[in-house]
Amino acid sequence: EAQVTQNPRYLITVTGKKLTVTCSQNMNHEYMSWYRQDPGLGLRQIYYSMNVEVTDKGDVPEGYKVSRKEKRNFPLILESPSPNQTSLYFCASSRTPATNEKLFFGSGTQLSVL
Amino acid sequence: EDQVTQSPEALRLQEGESSSLNCSYTVSGLRGLFWYRQDPGKGPEFLFTLYSAGEEKEKERLKATLTKKESFLHITAPKPEDSATYLCAVQAASGTYKYIFGTGTRLKVLA
Image (cartoon, rainbow over all chains, first blue to last red; front, side, top):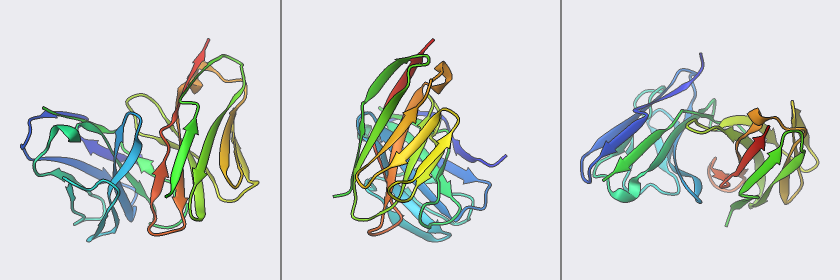
């Protein structure tokens, strides 16, 4: 089954403790992206990747890191999480980084930073 | 600044009561407008892409239309299983292949 898989689904951590949220897609997609979803603010892009080893900042990249060493994986790293990073996170992918390609989303990771 | 605004924020309908959701946008050149459906605890799921003014697409009880300033998602004779949050997104012609999302409309259809 074609899908985007995120782990974990739920994560509670404390301020400053490094964490990684994994994202993997099995559709051989070139484009991958991370979003955060907050009430009243909608989905905001954190980082995106056009292909392996090519990443760039989205609208809200502060406090986050990403890497794209393999085509299928695009982990999101929080080196020193803070409470304002408490949010619902989604990984998404599309076939190519081209115009009008629909996004496939993972099921989300609910992160709470205490 | 590129912007997407959805209205209403929330909508309650009786089963069979048709209505429309609105997505107004301001972008410097539109590459495409997307509608997604999001169920609680899940990621958004693609519904439609519209490319140019005047275009319409249909899927079961849903019909999406596009003008130069806005898009409508018409829901005809909705059923309780249509209850979800509906998200609108645009891809702007300027800059990178960025998607700008609206905050969504929470639809509840009562039996």
